[in-house]
Image (cartoon, rainbow, N blue to C red; front, side, top):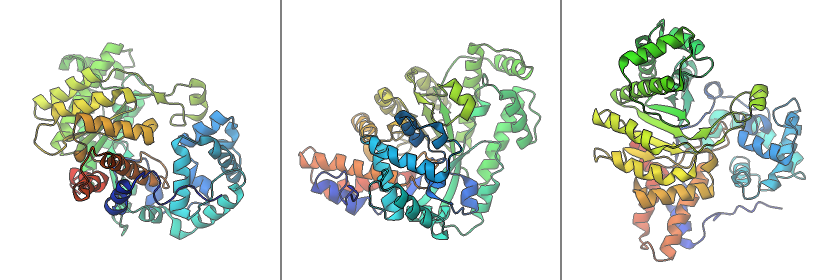
Length: 465
């Protein structure tokens, strides 16, 4: 059976089709948040087969396979790559109405010109065809990004990273700009196991012995400076929520000293510390002219048994129901009151927070620049058709969708970039349906401009690219 994905996939009428094909589809991609491997780009890796490129590290696929009853041996275990692929292929027909079904077939089409549906019967043939192509230089990591029409991609890096791979990429003739974000969460979560070990590692990277809170601040600023000198203009935080507690500087000094001396700290002390260090970091982001991102609401590492066996980021996280509004407001307000609120992107994992964030951004969009504070695109569990439409509708109803900076992959896979196409089709269909119903004027030039801006031009302007 040939692929069901046709030229006008997800485009329900002639207006949607015109918007997508004439105003969105051909624009380059600026993927400003992902988890691609810098060494793979630096050394222009050639994958040995499609399993290595497509299934390794993809916890979306892993969760689906586990749900179907696939043994872990064929997911993250010691089965052969071909066996793992065949078990994924058997799973795919059961993923209907999950975004994995659409993404799988879009990716096979766009990268490999494979139009067959992936299933148990087609697995052998598709594995062979895709792997033969991937095992050539034409399908190296850099060429995959070029095939995707990527203009900019931005990885996520720890403050202790030397950025050596990014330096190597920057010195090469690679046409795609590879940026990076500064993600210092390990320096914020003081209650986590390993915090003191991380302080030692951070101190080594900054050439500072971290004994006091002031030392920590100096080390973080040193690393921000180091990242900035190499072109970084973006930070990222992945937190269950932003906390905001009143504190004194003396309290923070004492809390940090207790922790460094391996003494127990209370939950309230941890929240005060997090408040202080988050404010310090955000003020530095403003000083350096960076953009800050906050990914909020994930309930992580729910299955402690599997966490022990496989480690974090292997498919055991879910949507949390943390309260977001009040403390987030206080945090942003504290920065704004000091005129130290930089460009900010807020993401939620819980769809019940859509309207919370869509209205929160209006509190701090002060007219200084267009779309200074952004409600970020549907993320993780929400980067599917229903989640995207809900995010787009909340943003439209509560703010200006015309200022939206659009989609990102948040992915570890070099084959994930058709998610931008998926998003663009959904955006164009949303506008096209309302033109057809008479809810929007049939002004294709103007609405086409809005669609183009959401697809590409807004994010290009926002990041000063």
